Image (cartoon, rainbow, N blue to C red):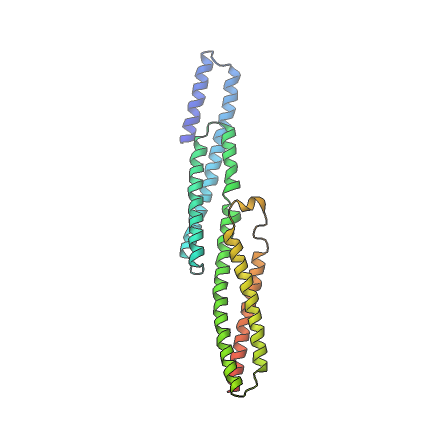
Length: 237
């Protein structure tokens, strides 16, 4: 409503000046066209920004309610999302006060160049949730491995043949190491990604999900080794 009133006032002023003969009639036609374009841009951007603000607020609620994100990544995401909300809100006010099509068009472009809500912030939350959760699981698997190693050493001291379980533990450790490397590498790269990063790399998170799926499968197989080793050790007693 503020945009419409502001643009109508400008148009009324032009009409008044034309009626006084202070401006040519062609100026009024040109001004009407410009004001229509300006109003269209302002209405369009208002809707675009409103949609993004709604998505960001919903995303922030998911971040704050997550039990899988690390405290560090939860704080990082929440801060970045709040900054996006503040920036878009300020941009919306700027566009609504723009008085020329050129200004409004230029400001509209920043919605897509500076605020990558869908291309960066949403997948960033999803990928950090997965990688943080898997890093937590990999830490638990590492502790399990250390416990198994101790039990194998005890069995070996007791004169038991532990060659088979030792080989299985070695394979388990290899999988844990591989999964941890994948999860930590992706967590590090994703956490450093900014909305503006997408401008120079449209494949910003390319392959990350596939790699995390591989790490997940490594963890599944590590758990299988844990079960096999635990069962074998019981039989050695």
